[in-house]
Length: 273
Image (cartoon, rainbow, N blue to C red; front, side):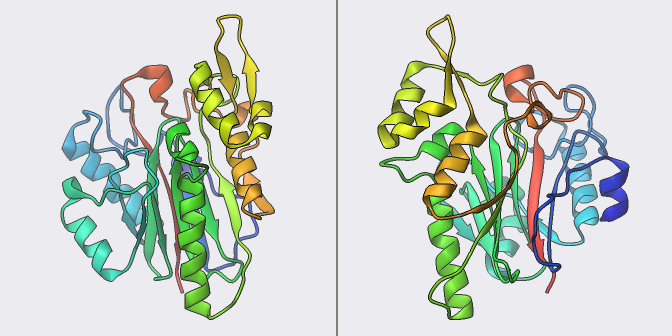
């Protein structure tokens, strides 16, 4: 994996994950798709040539050295547990990928994989590398209902898997936030701000007013608040600075908000033992 990651400047999380846990976030580079999907588009639902997407996914899998399991993401909160059975079913018929916006596993060689093009990818691992997870957090999935969004649901399921697997009463979780639409580019209506503030008054700090009576939202900041409320203290990656913004970093990242017709990045995490 290292040579391809370095060659195409893919992102590797800088976090204290154990040695058996691996993670990567692709960039636009390294694939065969042509404009506007150039070049490593991994989304099979955005209008790209299916032959090109299949070739890109083969490049991605070879780089990982693990089996990436793609999901049918719907901006919801469902979490899929990956094992030999669910992975085989998902990869046998990619067009019928399971509907979920997060995946988790304790099985080695299976890569929890999500696609993004402005939404926030969030990765999880236990300190001992026994379990890993990945979540797709756009604002709808992050918000969820009644204060329970995709991060809360992922943490709940992930924690249950990890505790059952190891037989502990408690555990720590390490999280990493990948690139997403930045707070300088994410314009939302008042209803979005109101919905987040209704769940948590402190969420108001993550919205900056615009003269148009709209707001600039800090998606990664909102996620950090939610993760902190779950008791997760080790949070790494996206801090809302410009280098993480999918909209403004046009040569590196796909962005649906910027381009409308856009490819998809993939973010994956897996364990090898």
